[in-house]
Amino acid sequence: MAASKAARRGQKPLVQYSTTIDGLNASILPAVVLSTVTWYLLQYIVQPLFGPDEYYIDEEFHVPQAQHYCRGEFHKWDPKITTLPGLYLLSSIVLVPFIKIYDTILSLFGVLDNDDLRVNDPCSLVALRAVNAVGAPACLYYAYYRCQLLLFPDENKKTKITKWTCLFLALNVATFPVIYAPYSMLYYTDAWATASVFLWYSSHLSNETHSLVKIIFGGFSVLCRQTNIAWLVFASIIDVCHCAEQCFPTIKNSVSIFSYIQTSIAELYYCCSIKKKNKSKKLIEFFQKCLRLTSPSIIVIVSFISFVVLLNNGDIVVGDRHAHIPRFHPMQLCYFVIFVLAFSLPWLLSQTYYQRKISNSVNKHFNLVKAFNEIHNNTSKIFVLILLIIISGLVYFNTIAHPYLLADNRHYTFYVWRLLFSPGKPVFLRYLPVPFYAYGLWLVDRTLMQSSIAYRLAYWIVTPLILCAQFLLEPRYFVVPYLMYRLHSNIYFTHFYTFKAAFIEFIAYQVFNFIIMWVFLYSPFISTMDNTGRLDRFTW
Image 1 (cartoon, rainbow, N blue to C red):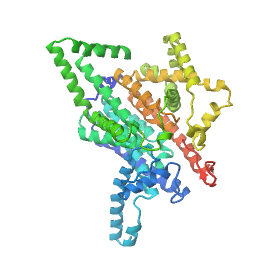
Image 2: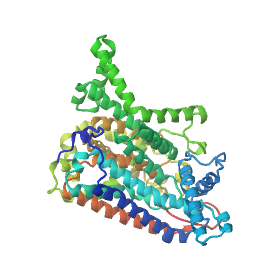
Image 3: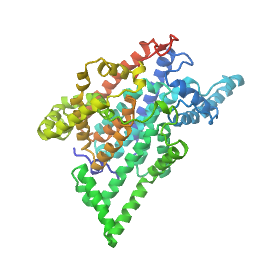
Image 4: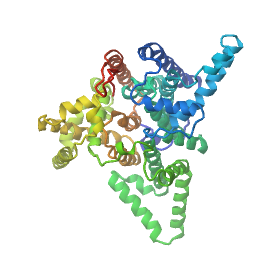
């Protein structure tokens, strides 16, 4: 089925999210089940294998900092922490009142005495981990599910199979292996940093959400991770493009990003250079629309820039600056598209399996065989050759490794790097993925063509901006760009076989999560990071 006009253009839909009983069950009930399951895993599977105060890697910094906030000691800050205090603020706001109310109720029934109330720590390690386990996956599920309904309202009101497809796609995101296992059961910032982006984005997509709510969600998202500011820029670019399309209809006729930019600049230049009343009126109307749509995001963006420039000496990170110096690293984009191919594989293969039963419009984007044929038949051989040469040049000049990547053997990236790129390995190994880098870049761009040119333009501005300044190769940096890519590429919900593909992807992700958790929990090794003989565990 063809996508709705609002979805194809990436515009905010006029049909708003409906809170019917069915819609409420589909958005709330799975979130509650997900919270319960994750809490059970934390309480009865993960926590028994750790000591009561045994931290895992970065928890050594996050947990004491959160406990300072729980005690109201907001002036204390660990200089090793690089992110803003969004997670610590959330933890103190949720846990301190909840634990006090809970303990007071128990004391009324004689279960606790006053001495227990004085020593009971509201922000113990397990309580802090529960903030992630109970809250983050459920909020991510709810926000992503709601984003789908808001982006594609026409598709989502047609059939029940559409609701089931959206449900499983949202579950796939909420249990996405890189952030769910094991980070949703540890006190790390990643789970809430991801959930907060989509909580903000779901509020941004709704015309009924008050601007103050959008500002609060946007601010909270940036407080959880500074690079989330880029997604507010992303939304602002799309809003400005849509305002331009409404005020200057010729822009809609553009067939490529280049012609879109060219036409937009020409229209604006024409309005500024020719003193005609109707043109001036149209220009004023354009700026008024832009201001009205983007003002919540602009307020957060300007506030963040002011903080960076005036209070943080021009640095984005707030601590451990020497280990997190930005560095031009365009190879990150190549690693990202490999990440996209790897985690899209269950979806791609299942869509290919059902190729005879899915409409040709879907196959065009998700059938691997047809994709390769399309590259061969429709893409300039010279363009492919130039792309391969550019990527090979990046591999030669920009295959660089952060000291943390080379030193920390607790992460899977350490072993991948040592296998393919470490000194002493045959040089040709690092060039083997070059065709996959090229294909991945082509596939991502081709898939984004299902959405609007405005979205495609914004995505290719923001994603390299986020990734190419990161020196450290870290899969968790790829999560939000990947989930945004999937959100805007999943526009065919109504076919039963699309639901099957979503369900198969769900099963594949849970198998992956099981393997990752099993290795994390039951395959510890003696740490080589120090001489204490402590146990370490493998993770992303």
